[in-house]
Amino acid sequence: MVTEQPDTAYRTYVSYIDKSREFYAAHGYERPYRWARFDDVPFTPLPRPLSELRVGLVTTSTLPGESPDAGPDDRPPKAAYAAPMEPIPDRLYTMDLSWDKEATHTNDVASFLPARELQAAKASKLIGSTSARFYGVPTEYSQRATKEHDAPAVLDFMKEDGVEAAILVPL
Image (tube, rainbow, N blue to C red; front, top):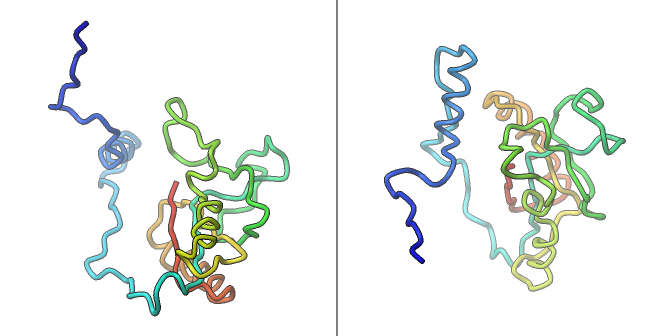
């Protein structure tokens, strides 16, 4: 039996940059979406080895509503938040975000909130400790809102919790 090889002349993955550009053009936007870009990366070297640092976890999903069937109208306005790491949430709200809901799902919370993996890193002494809370920056598609509101709020939460390094896990 002969198996066909994939045509390598075409991409075998979803090009989100192209799909976003096409989506905005189809909705009448005259300028293509402008992706965030930093010529001077605003990161700093770690002050000590990672095995001595407290690490926080940031996700772009939001906390679920009171009801398992809660929709966007049942939820508070999107804003940066901090929530207890324990117990690890069974689910987070993601249905308002744009992703291919026919080809995939977000039932595996660990794929965008790897809290157990972070705890395992602590147990194996790869990191010093974990924050008692995780942090959320709900997707707003606004670089300005992220820079002016969400990022400073998450930074304040992390300072309160003594976080020295963060893992950012976008959905």
